[in-house]
Amino acid sequence: METFHIFLSLFLFPLSTTPINPITSTFYADPEASIFNSLYHIHPTYSAPYDQQTFFDAFTSSDLVTWTKHEKILTIGNVSWATRAMWAPSVIKNGDKYYFFFSANDVHEGEIGGIGVAVGDSPVGPFSDLLGRPLIGEIINGAQPIDGFVFRDPITSAHYLYYGGWGHCNVVRLNSNFTGLLPFIDGTYYKEITPEGYVEGPFMLVRNGNYYFMWSEGGWGGPDYRVAYAMGNNPLGPFVKQGVILEQDINVATGAGHHSVFQLPDESEYFIAYHRRPLNETDANARVVCVDRMEFDQDGKILKVNMTFEGVVGPDLP
Ligand SMILES: *[C@@H]1O[C@H](CO)[C@@H](O)[C@H](O)[C@H]1NC(C)=O
Ligand SMILES: *[C@@H]1O[C@H](CO)[C@@H](O)[C@H](O)[C@H]1NC(C)=O
Ligand SMILES: *[C@@H]1O[C@H](CO)[C@@H](O)[C@H](O)[C@H]1NC(C)=O
Ligand SMILES: *[C@@H]1O[C@H](CO)[C@@H](O)[C@H](O)[C@H]1NC(C)=O
Image (cartoon, rainbow, N blue to C red; front, top):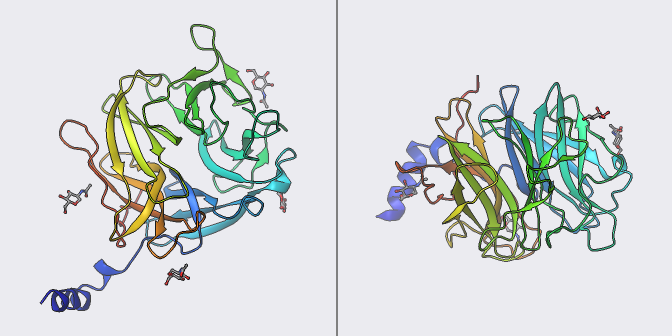
């Protein structure tokens, strides 16, 4: 009966069952979701062993279904201080330039590396290293300088960078051209905002005056990697933890995390981009990028995301 029903719906509605997820079978992770120039953009990590993870590709789409790949928009050869392990892009337009934040070198105490910033005239590059050194290269408050997420506060237009691995999250304020940091009101430059359970992969979203601070928990190489969030009323917190909204599903995939959110200009719909591990894979780097619907309840809480193979069809962008 059930089989017959599935067969019938495949036959009658072939489009609705065409798998859209993942957006490509090539391994990518840590997708940054953004909208530029009426196109959906995904800037992911190329997911491979650290010594092969040495460049960035980007993807664009008008509908979240058909994706165009833009190859090698930034490579290790473009960054004098980068030697291996480039990951976790975050992209923003500032003035008439596009800025591409990235992590490089999996830096430990005393090593060179961290979060860099590159600049270009297009969101799909080519990008050039802005500083010739990392923007953040020190380990402050125990946070490995990785996984930067650049955020423009819609209320004040101030730019912040949320970042940090090893279970610690810092936020810094960026200067107007992203060449350095500005102090907070108390004169400090690094504010630790680590919520309970935080591991890495911070993200910030504003909706109806609520600041949704989100992050990944668990180990990225294992099945229980997941996304949780907290709420606050300003970009620096305090934030109140709400819970986990994305995690493994035994029918779909494991290790779902390091996400980002497409916000439509009219705020009518939200689509979450994230990576997950196909059920038949256990290798840490076997990660694929997917997009699914993210919804809020009437109290503004985020509902649990249903991971799908069908994906979503994004509306035309203005
Ligand atoms: C970045 O490096 C690639 C080679 O990996 C080169 O083709 C490209 O021109 C470089 N881009 C810039 C902006 O210098
Ligand atoms: C960035 O702005 C600072 C002043 O805030 C200025 O000194 C510097 O030259 C600018 N750098 C670039 C690359 O525009
Ligand atoms: C998992 O399935 C995909 C799609 O069928 C296949 O390409 C891949 O090789 C499989 N991976 C393993 C580890 O068997
Ligand atoms: C997830 O699936 C449940 C059960 O089908 C449904 O009630 C819920 O609305 C779905 N959530 C989202 C965000 O689509």
